[in-house]
Length: 285
Image (tube, rainbow, N blue to C red):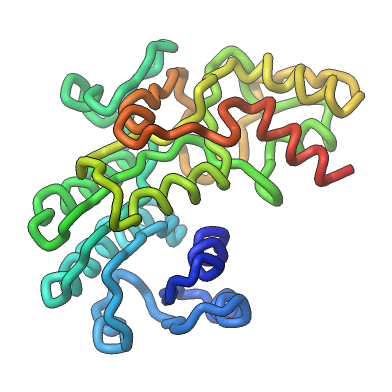
């Protein structure tokens, strides 16, 4: 939605596809020209696209239902887009993937080349990687393609950790691992740059994460001090809601963003959690 708002404000004609009818009405109200309600993994939407779009952004999330939801949303949805693109002229295709594809769990730095040395570690990560492979193996259908491996997204109305700290004196899990985050505004800015016809950025896979991976216990302490409340403790016997629903464990690694910064000359608006959360807390007060 933030991406659509920014594109519309810049004068672009924007269309959208969503399976959520309620959300479709919200999108229409924000000025999106064409809103299609359908499932991405189907092919029925292909004939419903009325405008001649030249730039495509696939920012789908899981459809739920565990692994089968990942399969339908990410892999089958990607395959449907590629099938549609074969009969269209697409200048730029952007896919928002995830840094969860990386298996590293020892606190080391992770770059885009890491998967060439290590195997993908989980069933859901394998689905994400297969979805990326679909783009790479069909890249001839796009003038340019960009796979953005996003780290933990946060921003206004998207600050689960902040809510936890405010509502509980105990945080699920351990604080002794690196958090890798990216503010939603920086994601939007990066995508806008990538779809700029004047940009000369090589197609490929890019990590999109901020400059300062930080241990969770350090982030929590800083946030609590900024809020003026007691610093919560960590309870390793509790499982986070995210990990419980996805049947995963939080990995300990530091995501390197060197490649995208050098390719784009990217300067993040929120280079660390401090700038990002300061903005969020300021809006809450």
